[in-house]
Amino acid sequence: MLGNIGNERYATPYCQCWNKRSPISWEQLITSCTCGEEIDVSEWKWEQPQVDEVSCVVISDDKKQVTFHPSYSSGTAAVRGDTPLLQNYHYYWEVKMLTATYGTDIMVGLGSDKVSVTQSQFEFTSMLGQDTESYGLSYTGAVRHAAAVAREAAGFCRGTIIGVRLDLWQGTLEFYVNRKPQGVSFYNLRRHGVLYPIVCSTAAQSSMRLIYAASWRASLLVDAGRALAASARAAAGRVPPGLRRRLRLQFWLMLPHRDCVLEEDEDTAMEEEAVQLQSSLGDFFPNQYLNGFYVDSVERDYRVVVWE
Ligand SMILES: [Zn+2]
Image (cartoon, rainbow, N blue to C red):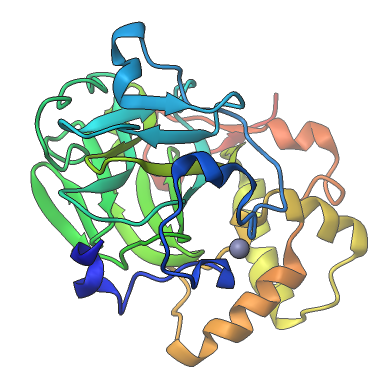
């Protein structure tokens, strides 16, 4: 547990439930902290490992909670999502770290279909980002890809919510820590045919829970939603109740992103406004407009939206 001291300045829990330093066994975690999990959206879950992998990963009955190396660790265990991530969709998912972070690495990220979850099972390594087929945020704060550290972000510890914002329309990847943006790390993810969410760990009895997984097909509506959120943020409190309720389910669209310059002292105000703005656009725009898609074979600036 001492391995994390160097990043304690950055790695913080999302809520106050995790102040006690005493260890929790992964079997006790089912009923502990649910802060930040008020919205129950899970479009995909973790994939049950093959029979021969069972010894290093335990997945809960609801397939949201993963425990790596339930007895002892002999390498890097990983699981991936049960659903491929598709081109031209926006994705956002969140994982909550449930146990103390220590050891070689614990990572949240994604990889192509060329990544095998068992490829590093007998070696202690930062599996995500060890080659060009995967991307990962380490608990140390390192954002890894192609066997290199691409960026330093905030790290994570027990109780931190790690968000992954994947835009498969523009091909960008950005990590969030406790819903604060860490900056776009990568821009060329459309080159992968298929991508899957992946988490991995070398730490014995380490555990994470998928607390949110949503997507939205890319359309002008998503861009409009962001613009609307930005202007509504200026007029906080004037969002119609119906809109607020719906935007709540897709709250990630309202999270600050790289276009927003987030000043240190604006953090709290921004978060309060974000809470007020939790909602979706479905009440605002008729449903048939939610299915527009971009025609993708032209330069980005000239792409158009076709309504199905
Ligand atoms: Zn809590």
